[in-house]
Image (cartoon, rainbow, N blue to C red; front, side, top):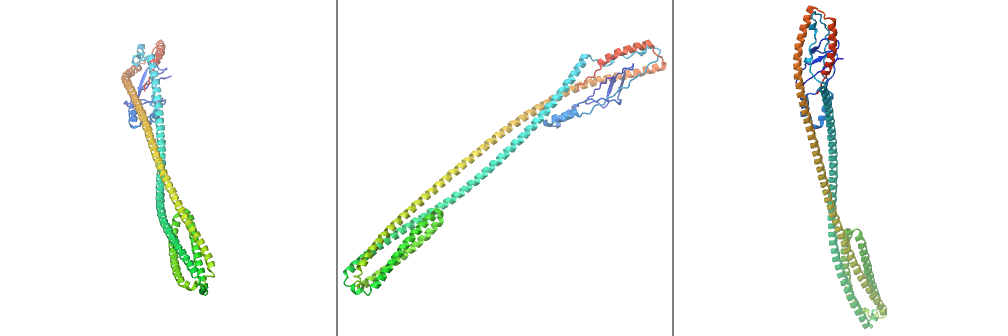
Length: 505
């Protein structure tokens, strides 16, 4: 078996020196800068590389990159020392002594155990630190993903809120437009109602005028009856003209029937106006205006008819003097007809009063409808105010949510900053530990260099001794060889204890 010890520092050159012993040779050999076929890998960490990693990498990537770098370190080259088996053949047995063991590095068993414990402890610390750095990197990634998801949710909620606000604003604008339209319609309906009221007032005035004119006609008819009674002597002379009077009476009856028909038409028109006013107010109001104009025209026509009737009455008065004599026979018929006419006039008055009542009811209904429209407008205004309040509440809720999310983000950022600070502190601790290890390595390199110088001196002495032995060609005695072998085996065991490798890197 063979044991090799190698030590390398971050600032040392590429030359490597090794110390080896073999069980077959009697000579202790030291070789520097030679490579053989059997190479054993050693892990190494450089302080300069760690400093570069600490400066260049962020706290999130430090753990992963340090772990990869620790695993991907190139193994150090090792050298195997050739075994020197040359024997001395000199006549002087005293010169075949092995060099003293004081030149080899002295370490007790306790020191080697401490070194191994320190090595295992350092490796465990490095593994734990790398694992902690990896865990912290994963936590940072998770926190970043959570922040991204929270930000995306906030953006989605904000966009939804903005859409809701836009929809509410559009709905409010539509409602405002509808309210403006309703206000316009109400103003138009109020104007139309005022015009209807004015038209109704005009109709009432015209009806009163017609009733007064009818009263006048009735009075004149009564006078005519009285004159007819007084002029019974003259009725005999009016027989020839009775036919013409009857035709004129028929004409008057026709005019009265036409007036009744027109009154019925007016009733129908008023009923149609009332029915259409519920369905299409504006159109019916316009139609009502046209009908009122027609009514005015008809009233004018009636006035013209009355004037013509008055003219005819005056003409009849002139003719009655010639006709009254012939009317005694038909006086009873005339009186009955007059009664019928009076009854019809009373019915006409009753119908006029009913028309007045219907007009008043229509005006009341329209006023009630206006009140209903005003109530609807008030309810719409209340709904608009409610929507505005809901909009303000939604905006307040969104602002509160934004504030909460911002507070959460601030807390997460503070936690991340604290974790990053902890990572930085741990990296600083690692750098300090690496500095201590580098100091230990430098001290060991100094010891190693001193040992190399001593080995060179010993090598020169060995070369000189071999030359002297070869020149003399003296073989050592067998007893001395046996004793040297025994001493060699005992010294070999001591040397194995002493030359245990101490890896603090």
